[in-house]
Amino acid sequence: MMKELDCRGLACPGPVLRTKDLLENHRPDVIKVIVDNEASKQNVKRFMESQNYKVNVEIDGSLFYVIGSDEAGSEVQSEERPAPEPHVETKKIVVMIGTDRMGYGDDELGKKLMLNFLATLKEMGDDLWRLILINNGVKLTIEGSDALPILKELADNGVYILVCGTCLTYFGLLDKKDVGETTNMLDVVTSLQLADKVINI
Amino acid sequence: MGLDRADDAGVYKISDHLALIQTVDFFTPIVDDPYWFGQIAAANALSDIYAMGGVPKTAMNLVGFPVKKMDISVLRQIIQGGLDKMKEAGVVLVGGHSLEDDELKYGLSVTGFVHPDRVLTKKNLKVGDHLILTKPLGTGVINTAIKAALASQQTIDKVTKIMVTTNQKAAETMAKYEVHACTDITGFGLLGHIAEMVEGQNLGIRLHASDIPILPEALEFASMGLFPAGAYNNKEFRSCMVEFSPSIDSILADLLFDPQTSGGLLISVSYSDAKALVQDLHKAGLTDCSIIGQVIENPPGKIVVT
Image (cartoon, each protein chain N blue to C red):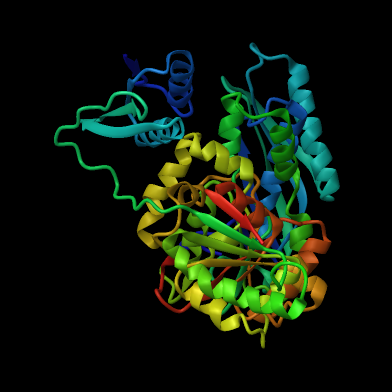
């Protein structure tokens, strides 16, 4: 089933709302939305993507044809269309660490395990997106911590390390932190929301 | 202060101890409730005075009202909202002007005082400074969602509360520090306003995307394509000055261009003052404020987002 929607002359968020109505009522295999401005083009494309449609945009003079195909349904035939933006498929894994030792039982063993765990994390490759350190976990980031070189290596490899500012302040360690970015709860929550997978240690 | 450089308001020096700051701002409704709209419009208009390091003193109402289509009680509530906000800020309403208009509009012309040596502009950044943002971003996207009737009442209440909060406390708190530069984040979005600060300067700015406070609801609505057109205009105008690290999600990147209504202050202070100022701002109740980046030497005139 193919549906077409003419949204010429409509300002944001009009085209998105009309697209939303149509998708909610019909869920067509293919939907084509005609818009006449850049903002609506981007917004309609984003909305379709959020609804799991695969999107191509064709440009005809001042008009944009935003064409979505239901990823579960039939594919749009694509001819000479510019390929969609290259996108490397990596997962976003967040590892949230609320302690400086791993597991319960022996604390010395727990600290060694934590170092080993952090050193092995790089095996996740590009999927490892962010590390969030809270409560006792922030102690891993301070001067003199055995974990410091390992965390710095992760940071150099592009892993974003978020260190809870409230926790650092609580322990009086705000000036001792030597790796990562001091952060707040909103960033923590946003990271958890954006992540594909959260691992809690 | 001349007009050759973009700044938040006009400044006129009267004596060695006193300068006037003048600004004007008005817009069409963003929330349905007229009283809250009045408060938001007033908070937004006062903001430029605070961004210049001044204290607002007097104001005049600017009103466009569709008198044939709308009940006059709506206007009364709007003006009451504005008046309550002015009282809170210690500002005296001294007059105003209204006219018939097809579309409702409300705002203020505000006059404030500042010591001529304490005027804060956008152009006195120092390499090594840290940048502090005092309010979370995302009001443009959420206001679009409100217009589209997709925002919950809870979200409307939350964003209204943020927009009616004036920058008074932020300004009073930063006045205790040696602030190098300051601006308020409004229609050009965070990156648009930062672009004005570094344009033509011999320094640049690095922002840490994950440190920038963003309303989670804004991320959700942004991924549904509920950006106001202004966000894309801002991006088109300024993207030549911005380098995004490849790890930055495109939705997050565009949110940094989201036009803000009654947004926070962006404050540039030395590294050694930054942490203490943030703690003071937190104590003053501005719990969302955080250090979002720093002033760097290279690349000059650019914003790097990592």
